[in-house]
Length: 123
Image 1 (cartoon, rainbow, N blue to C red):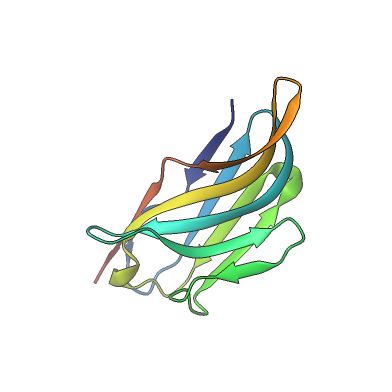
Image 2: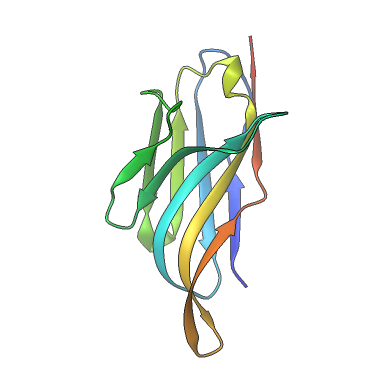
């Protein structure tokens, strides 16, 4: 069974920084991509950033230079650094991963979500 476990969220004052981590575990053969989405109350889930196994990163429209994503494929871990946090960054941040996993004797491409970690920024 594959799991994504996020950590690093919390309450922070505006202007502060946070580093989120997400570790994938289970019968994983290949990590194709990992990334972060966020969902604020009353809003749709949106892409923050994603990164492919070759290191190419993609940032969402609202992810300015304050966001940085990187990964360690050997550890099946993705990180998201957020600097100069603003109240509008308040949201649940979800880890997402595109993986090739063993299902019996077959290798399948699957997409997984973590449970989410709350980030709250006070003004």
